[in-house]
Amino acid sequence: MFASESWYLTVVRTQGLLFIRPDKSWQPIVSVAVVDPQQSHEVVLGCDGQNPNQKAPFTLRGVDHTSFLDVKLWHKSRSKKRKKRHLVGSAYITLREVLQRQERPGSDVDIRLSCPTSQKRSPTIGGRQQRSATLTVRLVAPEPIPSTSPTNTASDDDILDEDELDRRSTGSSSHSPSETLVPASQSRDETSPDLSGLVESGLRRRKKPRIKGYHIDSESDCDGSSSAASSCPPTPRDDDLTQIEETKDDDYESYFPHHERSYNSGSPTTLAPPWGLLSAFSLPRHVQDHDTNQSIPLSFLEACVDCFAPYRELRDAVEDAEFDKVLSRLLMEWYVVAASLLALTGIDAAVFGLAPGSILPIGGFAQHAVAFGAIAAGLGLVSVSWFLVLYAGANTARFRRVATDVYGSYFFFSLTCRAPTLCMFLSALALMLFLLSVAWAAWSTAVLVMSCFAGVLFSMQYLIFGCHRAVNFCVWIVRTAWRAAVRREVAAADARPAPEVRAHEGGRAHAHMVPDVRERMPASVPTKGAIVHEEIVEVECEG
Image 1 (cartoon, one colour):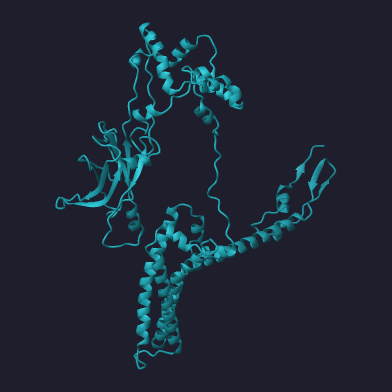
Image 2 (spheres, rainbow, N blue to C red):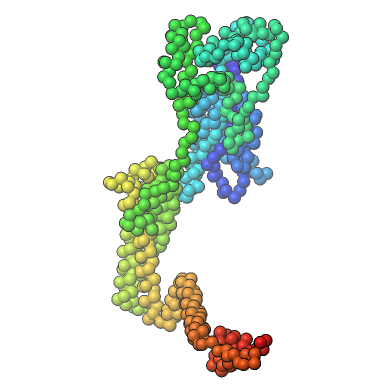
C-alpha cells in the first residue's frame, strides 16, 4: 500500500539487560534487518541503554505492513583480543504488529526480546530479569496524501490568519456554533475560493511558531510529528469554547436545532456537530489524590505470621513485579537452606555410624540431641524439596495461583514457606548441644568459658544498655535526695521570726540585735535570717 514511501524506525532504549556483571559498563549494539527487501541498519547504544542519537532514525525503503523485522541485540567486548559478538536478545516481528501496539501514531512501543538461555541457571533476581529484556522503538509510518483542489495551491505565506478570516467571513454578525464549527473535510474546499480572492488583494499571513512537546526521559521530540499532527483535529477557537462553556448545561437538541437539521439534510454548507468539544468539557478538571498506601490492619494471628514471613507483602501486592520480588527472595533462601540441610544430614548420619568404643564417650543426652537434629534435618529437606518442585520454574501467574489457599489468601503459604529455615535452625541447635555435651566430658572449663564469651558477645548491646540505664537511675536518685535536703533547710530558715526594732528617746533608734543564725546553719546554704542580720545596722534618725 505504501511500498513506494519510506518508513522511519528509531531505537529509543533497552531495559532488563544483565548479560554481564553490573559493575562492568558495556554498550549494547542493536541491529535491525528487513527480510524483504534486504536492508540492514545498526546503532550503538550508551552504557545506560539509551540511544544518544534519537534524531537520526532508520529509513526503511520499499517496505509495507507485512514486512518482517529481524531485531538482534549484541554484546561486544572492549578488549582488542576478543572481537566476536555475543547475542544477548532477538525478536522477529512485522511492521503491522508494531503499529497495532502503538497508542497513537509515532508513540513508543516495547518489543520483548527472546534471550538465549545461559549454561548456568541462576536462581537470583538477575537471572530472572535477563529473560524479560525489552527494546523500546518508535515507528513512523507514511500516510496517504489527501487530494487537494487546484484552487488550494497558495503557499503558507499567502494565507491569512485564522482570526482575520473569521472577521472577514462573518462580518458584524454574531458567531453561532453552526457558523464556526466546520468539519476538516469541508473547511478546505469552502475556504479555498475566499483565500484566492484574499491572496489577490495582497493580504499575507504571518507565520506562527509551532509549539512542540517533548517526551519524559528522552531527548527527541514528542510523538506528534508532522504526519501525526496532520491527522489530529484542529484546535477549537476561543470564541467557540466560550459559547459552549456558557451553555454546557443545556440540552444539545434545544441548543442546536437548526444545526442538527442542516447536518441531517446533507446540504453542502452544513456543519458537523461538535461532539469532540462537548465531550472535552464533560471531563473533570481536577482529580482528587487518593492515598494508595493505606492498607487494612492485620489481625493478631496475621501479625504473628508477618513477623517471620512476607505475609503483608503478598497481601498488599498488586503488580506482577511485587510478586516476582517475593518469589525471587524465597527461591534464593530455599536454595541456601537446601544446601545447609544436606550438610547437617551428612553430619548426623556420620555420628550415627560411630562405634560405642570411640575416643569421646557419647551419653544419653548426646544421643537424644543428635537424633532430634537428624529428624529436623530430614523434615526440612523434604519440605524445601517440595517448595522447589512447585515454585522453581514457575512464573508470576503460576506463583499467585499455587500460593493462594482455599480461603483466597496467602496466610497458609506464609505460615509454611519458612518451615525449611526453621527446621535448619532446630537441626543446627541440636548439633550444637550434641557437640557441647560431648566436649563437656573432655574439658568442662573450656565449654563454660567459650559459651559465656559467645553469650556476652551476642547480648553486648543489651548489657551495655542495661548498665547505662542503671547508672542514670543512681544519678537521678542522688540528685533528687540532695534537692530535697536543700529545700528542707531553706523552709526551716524561712519559718524563723524576723528581728524587732525599738525606738528610743533622743531621736535615736536602735535595732534589737538577735543571735547570729548562721552559727546554726550550714555555710553553703544562705537563709533569710542571715541576710536580715547582715542588713540590720544601727541607724541614726533625725528628730
